[in-house]
Amino acid sequence: MDKFIIKGGNTLRGEVNIDAAKNAVLPIIAATILCAGKSTIKNYPMLLDVYVIIDALRSLGAKIDINRINRELIIDTSDITDSGVNSDLVRKMRGSFLIMGPMISRFGRFKISFPGGCNIGTRPIDLHLKGFKALGADINLEHGYVEVSAKKLTGAKIYLDFPSVGATENIMMAAVLASGETIIENAAEEPEIGDLANFLNKMGARITGIGTDTLKINGVKALRGISYGPIYDRIEAGTFMIAAAITKSRIKINGVNKEHIKPVVAKLTEMGIDFKFKGQGVLVDGRNELQSIDIKTMPYPGFPTDMQSQMMSLLSCVHGTSVITETIFENRFMHVVELKRMGANIKIDGRSAVIEGINKLNGAEVKATDLRAGAALILAALEAEGETEIFDIHHVDRGYVEIENKLKGIGAQIKRIKS
Ligand code: EPU
Image (tube, rainbow, N blue to C red; front, side, top):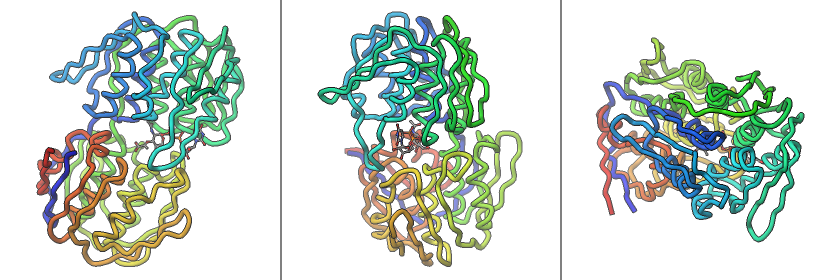
């Protein structure tokens, strides 16, 4: 497996371009199943996770042209059948479960391997299933498979016990062709959900309440294939903001939605980092003396769990005591032991990590345990004295497009060693 070797200590400068959001593109690709037609996804991010969902659709019978030069995916879902999806793909990526909503909506039934937990938590699907059931579906869990079937889906009022991103998306996709009105209360409000709703509305769906915790979906008879450009990746942008801060540098980031990144910018501003937004770009200045802070991850518009580990790398080298509390996933502190190898002073107390900032991290051999943990280690390595080797970087390739080239482009010393 590939590894990164990073020599720390460089000051970053110049500009970096942000790609489209992985977590918007995955449900949007799943949503193309909802009609028998052709859709074009513009500026798709060339990521492992995107290729996994492409393979999942192909295994159902979709024809997908990947145009790497124009960065376009042309997805023809005309010949999809409900014969079943390659189970390995669902095991490989939990996001593949997002094809369930569109499949039951189009075919009335679908069976898929039960998605397992992963390195960051058990990640159940009870809320997805609760929503499907409310719409009139029968659920059958047997031999490691989940089968959902419904002669007819009918609009219903669904209250989510927790604003789950995936459950909101899956239920919304199951409801767009149901008869009557569906109301999802306590829906997740993440910008990626708004993007999926906009995509569905462009296909002909009738969804209102976008960006709020109450989504209203009026079922329509049919949807059509469309062309769509997804939103920018707020987590990739936030990761580069921290790259500037941790190296005490000033860089320009292009492709940032000021509104979507607000929860991250608010915390970084509190620490002393300066931001100048102009259009879809932002100049980030991390050269000030930074302050320690406390952070609690929360559903949007709270501080995103997907930025928690990167923030921990930064706080590890900011003078003072900081506390990070993770409330979304029960096991998202796997990066702590790796950061400690680099000299970080972090103690875990239940769902909180107490970080005593030190002057400088030091290079070490470390392992990426999941996508964002990998990003956190790259950031720590940019600051550290000496060389850091990061193993298992396939996790990073799931969610960051050519991160080493983007970092090299702004002055970092990073190389990929292929094995
Ligand atoms: N949950 C339940 N029951 C359910 C669904 C979720 O208890 O039926 C719990 C989960 O176990 C977790 C919490 O609710 O503790 C949040 O899970 P959610 O469903 O909101 O997350 P997800 O849809 O599985 C998406 C992103 C994650 C991101 C989370 C939270 C995609 C493909 N994934 O996951 O992204 O962390 O929302 O914002 O959109 C990443 O990009 O690194 C990543 C993990």
